[in-house]
Amino acid sequence: MQTADLELQNKSYNTTLYLVAAAGNIKAVKIMVEKNKALLTIAGGNRKMMPLYVATLYGNEDVVKYMYNHSNNLRDGGWMPLNRRWLLLKCVENDMFGKHYSLYR
Image (cartoon, rainbow, N blue to C red; front, side):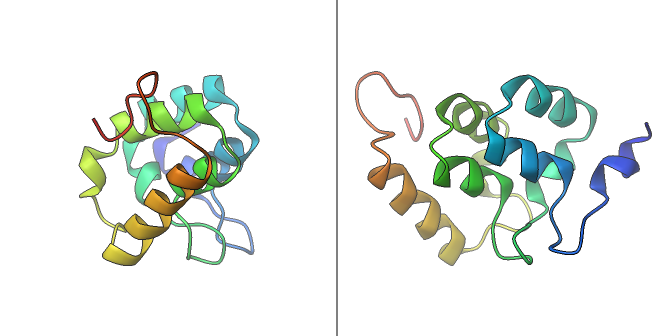
C-alpha cells in the first residue's frame, strides 16, 4: 500500500486511521502513523473531528496517548481553537487527567 492510499476517505470523509482510532486499535494506529504521519491531521466525521478527538470521544486511552505524543502539540494542520477545546472537554469528561495519565503534561 502506498502512503497516499492511507489518506483515502469514505463518504463521511473518514480515513482508515480515523476508524481504527474510534475502535481503539492501537496496533493499527501505530502502523498507519509510522507510515503516514499526515493522517493525524485529516479530519473525519464529515470533516469536523480529528482522529485524536474521536479516540478521546470513545475513551481509547492508549490510542489517545500515542496520537497526542505524535501530534506536534496540536499545532499541525487541522487543529483550530474550537477542536482543541472539544479535545480538552472530552479528556476531562473521560477522566484522562491525573497522576497516571501523561496527556497534556
